[in-house]
Image (cartoon, helix red, strand yellow):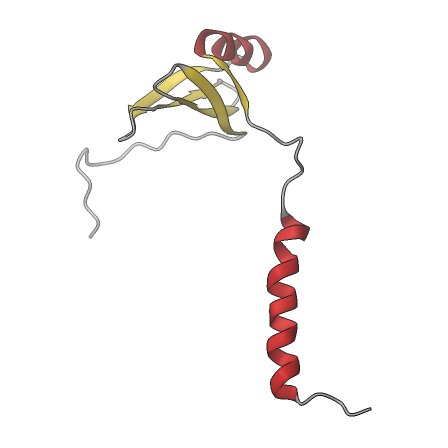
Length: 108
């Protein structure tokens, strides 16, 4: 039996890796976003983590992005869609507020 030339094996190996990597790193089906009505989600964050809203903004699609945090540094990012459903998008620890010297953005 003849061995295939390297010009075929190398692209084939890359194709196998490219096709199987997403299967290995994908999240489990049970890892779904936590969603509910905004008052209930905020009550849960306040009761469990002592978090309260500190910042919010309106996205171009009409959703409201909101950041909650606690005095101990825990934080959450919530997204409320125009129909009123709020979902926990991210959460973590060690939140630190950064104060800018200038209120205006200056990239230089």
